[in-house]
Length: 636
Image (cartoon, rainbow, N blue to C red; front, side, top):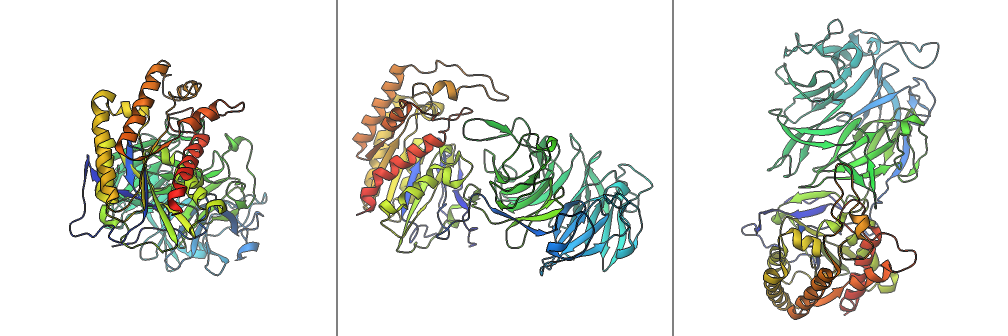
């Protein structure tokens, strides 16, 4: 059984409402010890707290690894080297970084010992010093000529392939010799067939799949696929494609059983295709329909100039429009994006960029173009405007959502000095950009603070499951969390939005849920596991919040402001309180905290302006209330 990536979130695989345990598995026989199960609208079982005592930062450190910032084609030590326009990156088999220096008409390399060399390409600087004249010549690498090369990929043999854009061909570098692999500078077109007869037009980006097929972003024509046998075919696209990437994904929306996915970006979307058949799998708009929530509001995402796989469910891409680097997670249902380097500046391209190293939230880029994942897991960016190669250090991946089967969950006990908390919940749990701003992240921080540091460290196990209701969520707790492998279970009861969206009614369904909570309480009690149930309001339940929650968002009409009246809110509140108390669970009531904060003079929104998730303030209130309530039990 493979060990999950450090810091990744682990999700429970389920079919419908059935939860299955791998035959013969001794799951949780010596597993984690605390589970906080929050939410009943969307659930995933996962672990987010297995990490070093000091976790990777949410904002990775940005530093320059090559390039002095001066224009030129100087080779030598990385710090003194010069570039003209680095635009594309790819790592070789020996760890060297290959760099396409477009304006210099060269392919450069940064060795593992920090030296920059020219691998292929030639030509003198123009009098302006801004570039080298393009040309076309095969032969010895140092005498070869390119014309605005824009993409690069390395196959398993170590051969280097270059998208020679204005020569309308793909060139290959092998053993110091440059040859034309496909296409011809004298003829532009979209002809498929054999390598020696096919034509291209402005090829820009390259990526190999595991079978050795080469995919080429050929903007006017779509995506060209070249098999190892030398056959060229075309996947037609709606818009001109600027970047391609073949990445392996876990089971999810693209691949129900997992496997490789071909991603292609244009000015508006990132589109997923089946690399074998070319069939469309999914489209993600990057400029309008797909937006990233920044606390209370919307901000558009710029187009993806270059893509690189980071985990088996996430990629990073460069966003030159906003002069930043994005991390895009593609889980089972929703899509998550986070800014890693340089806070996005709307229409930054109109104002120019800036160069500054440092933490990601203060670092700046001039024109980030190429991106690649380094062998050590860091991210390397070709900042073409700054004429530098930049590195983004490791960052906290716990907002990444990695689907795993039940049997892949950890089966060894945590260290005796660690108190591990699994936070199982609705999408409220990760409705933030960084782990430290989420409910589980804040809870982990609160429990680990000096004022209640009763154990050496605390870790959080988030549990979130898509598409199951409260009864199925309680089944989950009974099946996987009541076998003496956890110290505590905290179940967040659905708020009124979540309850009604599942088609549940107080009269008929709440009594069933109450009885099921009693059974869960008894199952946990057999192993002396305390059972807490948390309840907190939704956006319609707090006076003054409804107007924020129901503002019209891009692509969505304003919603009806009269969904619930005060009597309905009180009825739901009272009924849920009675149900939790009668179940025997310990109640954590966050409603008073929300109301008290809302009545304060300088109150800010408790829910987002774009949906029903709690805002940063709301998430902090929930997490701190849980921490305050469970601390006495943890101290025993």
